[in-house]
Image (cartoon, rainbow, N blue to C red; front, top):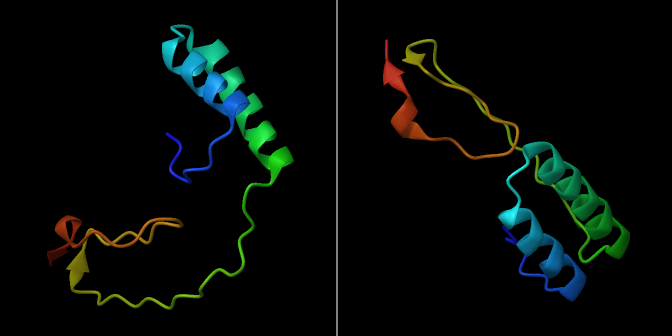
Length: 79
C-alpha cells in the first residue's frame, strides 16, 4: 500500500485501520483522509514528468494507451 516507502506513525495507523475495516464507505472516507494527510505532509515532490510519444500500427489490436502505466504487450495481437 505504501509504495513510496515514506513512513509516518500517524499514516501507518490509518493504513492499518483501513485494512481492517469491513464497511466500504467508511474505508473510502478514511482513504480520502489519508490522501489529504499525505498531501499536507508533502513527503516528496515530482521534479519532472517525461513526455512520451507513442505510435501504433493499424494492424495491431488490443492496444490501449494507459495514462499511468506502461504498455503490456501480452494484451496486443496482430489483426
